[in-house]
Image 1: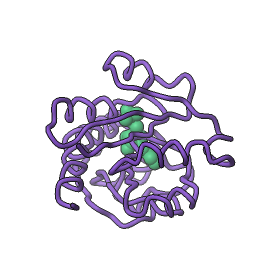
Image 2 (image 1 turned 45 degrees about the horizontal axis):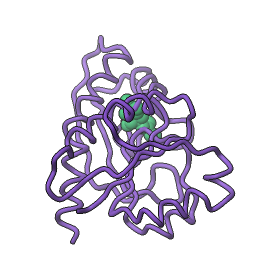
Image 3 (image 1 turned 135 degrees about the vertical axis):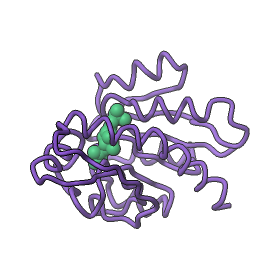
Length: 190
Ligand code: GAR
C-alpha cells in the first residue's frame, strides 16, 4: 500500500475530497493529515472521516526537526499540500525529493508567490479581468510556487464572475483533478 500524508491549513475541502477518493482504494491510502492551525476546520473533517490528524506549531515545523522526523518515520510515498500556507523549509525538499506536491488555485506562474493564496488569488484574477483561470499542481521546491509543473487545468471566466464565483469554479477543478493526478503519480512512478 502506498501512503499519502496531507498537509492543510484551513477548511480542508480538498483534504476531504482526497480522503473520500482513496477510501477503499486497493493501492493507495491516506495515512494522516497534518495541520499548522490548531483550530483549522480540517481537524473536524478528519475526526468525522476517522482519519488521524495532528497539529504542529511553527517551531516544530520551521526550527526543530520534530515534523521532519515524524514525516521520515511515516515515510509516505507522497506528501500532498492541500491548502497548506507555509513555505516548505529546504530540508524537507531535500529529504523528500520529488515526493512533495502542491496545488495552487491559479495558472502559475501567474498569481503565485508569497501572500498569494485562497481568496487573494481570486480577487487578483478578478481585478485583472482575466478571461480564464485554473489550477496548477506542481512539485514543491524551496521557492513558493516555482517547482516543476505536473498538471494545469483551465476554466473560462465570465465578466460578471465575482471572486466567490471564481473560487467555486476553481474548487470544482481541484475536486475533479487533484485526486486523479495523485493516483496517476503514485501508480505510474514506481
Ligand atoms: C485551495 O483552493 C488551494 O488551491 C489553495 O487553498 C485552497 C484550500 O481550500 N492553496 C493555495 O492557495 C496555496 N498557495 P480547502 O482548504 O477548502 O481545500
